Every structure is written in C-alpha cells, then in structure tokens.
Image (cartoon, rainbow, N blue to C red):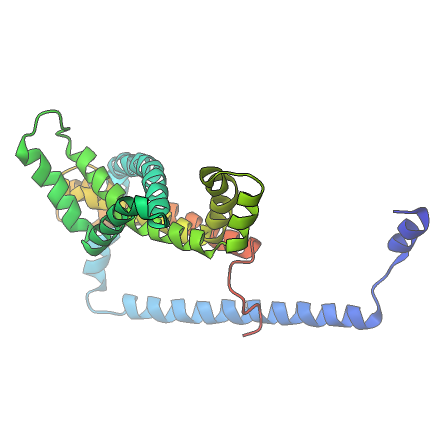
Length: 291
C-alpha cells in the first residue's frame, strides 16, 4: 500500500447515508433483542404459574426438587458422570475410525472392491435399523452368556461396543454424504497432479468432506453424550445408574434431576459450539438473514 493510499484509508469517513443505515440496523437489532427477551419472560412466567398453582405442586417439588436430597446425591452422580465422559471420549475416537472406514468403503466404485462396498452397506443397514437399546441388550447380556474363550466379559466393554457400532453406521452415512458432495473436478485435478487414490482421498477429498458435514458430526457427538447413559441398563454405574441407586432408598427422584442437569451442563455448550461453527463457516443455510 502506498503512502497516499494509506492516508486516504485513514481519512475515510462513512457518509451520512451509511451512518443512517448503520443506526437503523442497530435499532432493529436492539428491537429484536427486546422483543425476544419479553416474549421469553412471558412464556416462562406462564409455565411457572401453571406449575406452581397446580394441585400436586407441593408433592412434585418434594419428590423432584428436594435441595437436601440433591446435595446428598451430587457426589455419587458426578462420579457416575465421569464414566459417561470417559465413555464419550473412547467411543468417539473408535467411531471416528470405524465410520471413516465404512464411509470410504461405501464410495468405492471399482468392481473388484464390490465385496467391501457390500459389507459396508450391510453394516450400515443393520445397525441403523436396530434400536440402540436392543443392541446394548444383545451385546451386553447375550455375548457374555456364550462364555466364549478369549472374549471380554465386561458389560461395560460390550455396552461401549454397541454404542460404537450403532453410531458408526449413522456417522458413516454423514461422512459419505460429505465425500460425495465434493465435486468430481477435485478428484480429477488431484489425480492429474499425480496423487494416488489414497492420497487424493486423504489430502483433498476428506478435508473438504469433513468441513461440509461438521455441524452434523457435532450433533452426533451431542447425541452420543446423551445415549452413553443407556449402558445403565447393563448395571454399569454411570450417572443414571448412580441416580437410580440414590433414589431407591426413599423413592425421591431428585437425583435424576441432578443427573439431567449435569448432562445439560455438558450438552448445551456442545450444542452452542455446533451453532457457532455453522455460523462461522457459513453453514447455517443459504437463506441468509432475510426471513
């Protein structure tokens, strides 16, 4: 930049019309925020009034929102939640590996590799079609009952495997959609530069594909964090199972509310991160701000 251009840039001031437009946009934004805040307060007030004035509110409050019970059960529920967090991390890594392999196998077009594509298709159809809870039961209770030598007997392992298999089938389809959304010219350009098929996939296609489907992938991570609580049906002491144990002594269900609040404390930041990422990368839709 030359000295004259720098001087012009420093001396530039918006025109009167531009300042009026900026002031109008700012006033409309403030108006929208005020209306949204007022409407939210009205809705919350109506819900709170309906709850507090209902005939069973005192008993409901004592059963689900007992402060003393929440304090006494908080430590056990947090300890169980730590297992859910570790399960989320471990299963997330395994799902990333398995789903990427399945997605790539689903996109193979060479006739010689048809068995791999067929295997990936069957895997996806089966584990997307079965309810997750049913897979947890089948693997968690069924496989250890076979008493096969060399296989783990931990129900935590089989519960985690059920999560990996089911979620890999969903994530693989998301990744496949991302891979197939990359224009054919990208493949052709990379191959014309001398890159092999694996190198093209690794350095050209997959980075673009993952970026395009990142919001959907982050949503799957949020869902996995919630569904990790399903392993409680196998007797594993996670946050849900710990809440169940705490509630079984006096049939006060406040520990379940504590567990739910802790799950929300994890999932809401992840959801906001998903929204932020989508907006930052222009993935929130092509409609723009005009609605």
